[in-house]
Image 1 (cartoon, rainbow, N blue to C red):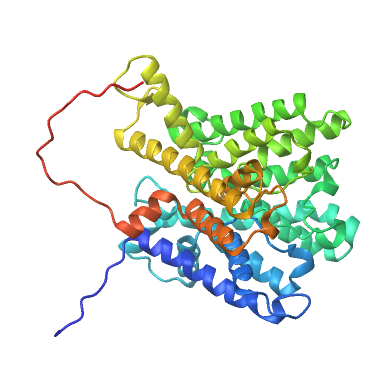
Image 2 (cartoon, one colour):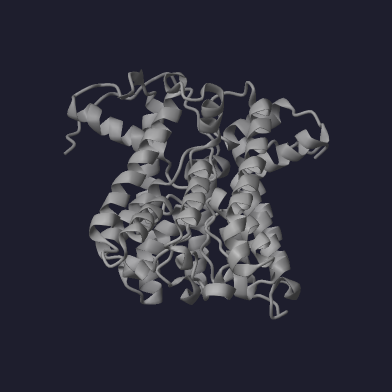
Length: 444
């Protein structure tokens, strides 16, 4: 061979390799004794699981973050959360912008795919806007949380405010409350603190509505008619997916709580399954119907180009509009008097099939392998695939095979299943102009 062919990676492959690289580096660092409080090595499978959960902003943990990991380990986890929340490509581009390096055309195209931007035009400006937005929101979140944590925990509250601000904004669900309120307690000690509930919920929602929605709000303020159709869909479905689950939780769950606490617990449990992963109530106290509703919310997730995972609210909107079009016997799918391209409908249907299949298969396998009831196993699978981090207290007890399956789900949920398919198989373009003959098949 006279010359080596230069391998050209696609934007999808770069994103996948970037996430895998950060996960591996993080897991190696977390293995070492100085990353844990007891100064002992953490088994590789557990450090890999923690790193995957952090980078994929999931929040499923095999160890309580506050009691197992040292301050150094917690800092590493927080950095992994920040990289995962922003996205590896955006993080790298942000460093390039700060250093003044010119962003090339291929890098711009990769960035467009990473943040689900509609076009390559203005992508660098959008990246700068998003970077400033992330720094500002996380800083404000820290400032707003400081009074609560400093009051209860003194100077340690500064670190706790910063950690939970970034974790909430990135929809990660990691917490460091274990040393103060008990292992794996999350935010249950603040269920009656309206102020903290509101701040954390706002951080979760802002992180989950997506960077393009931010830009619309910043540019057009309250002139909603000027928003992109996608931004309108994201905001409307976000409100729907908060209001109705919160109403259910208020009416049928938590009936023993005082009315004020009941309102905030209901709202928080409606917001957090949208890939955030915190909880202010013991999830084991929720009945089966509530658990199924939470699984649905976990699989839906947030908006495209956000810190959230899941199928995305836009996918749900397209699927809902497709059903409406079928009921009305329309050939085309439309939302808000805008026709939806067939590719989007096809992708939405594909995502639904992939998510439901993975959720059921992995949940069933965990139940069979571990000898656990089906419902908590399915809940665990939905939590991993939706990058949520909520659990019915089974994560720490799982074996290696189950952890590996959950890690794969977390990765798929964060980078996107279609992105993973394009990265591993490549995009297939059908250039053959001939078409197969049509034959009728009865459906339904």
